[in-house]
Image (cartoon, rainbow, N blue to C red; front, side, top):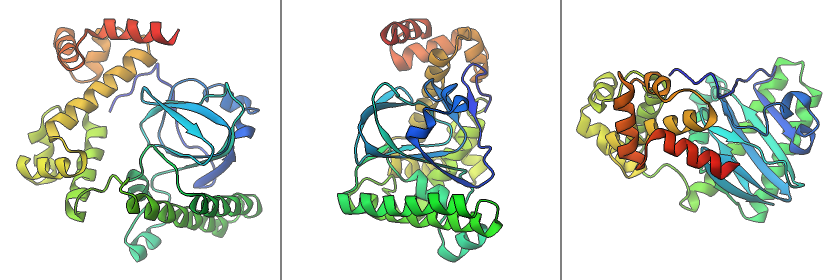
Length: 295
C-alpha cells in the first residue's frame, strides 16, 4: 500500500541476511540515532532480547514495558521507536522475512516468516530458555564477524536464526502465547489474507474482494480470521484501516483529506465519518489529543 512520506520507512540494507547488534552500540551510531529514537516504519523483522535494565518500547501506539529477560517482537510494517532515556542493554536481531533458504524451508516444512508471525509482541521465557537463546545469539554474533565475507557464513547464520526461532516458538506454543490458535489450514488462509491486506489496503476495503482473490467464500475467510483473531474478516480489515489512519495522523502532518485519499477513500468527508464512527472522535481531535499527550 502507499505509505505516508512523513513516516520514515527503514529498509533492510545489510550485506548479510541476518544482522546481530548490541543495543548499547546502537546509541553510538550516528546513522542509527538519526531515526532510532523517533517513530519509524520497518520493512523487516526485529527481535530485541533485553539483558540489562528497563525501558518502554512503543509499538503502534502501545507502550511495552521491557525488563531484563524480556523478548520484544516488531513485525514488518509496524511503526515503533526505541527508548534511550534509561541505561539498558540487549541484543537486536534484524532480518528479512524471506531470509531462510528455500531448500531448508522445503526440508523442514516451515519458514522464518511464519515462525516470526506467530510470536507475541512481548514475552518472557524462563531463565533456562532465555540463557539458551542468548548462547545461540552470541554464537551467531561471533559467526557474523568471522564469516561475513563467505556465502557459507551467511547460510550458517541464517540456520542459527532458524534454530533460535524454533526454540522460541516451542516455548510460546507450550504456554499458549502463540498466534496460532487454529488448525494449519485455517491459519495458512488467515496469513494469506493478512499479507494481502497489507498490500491492498489502500485500494480494497471489501471482504468479498479478498475472498475472490483467495479463491474461497466469505464464510470460509471469516472462519479463518475468527479462528486466529476472534473477529470477523470485516472487523479485521476495519481495524487495520483505523491503525494505518492513526499512524499517519500521529507520525505525519499530512492534511486529513490527503490521508483519506492515501487510504482509498474517495472523499475526505467519508474518511472523517469512518474514523469518527470507529474511534469515537474526528481525525483532527485524535491528532490533537495524542500530540498533546506526547508533548
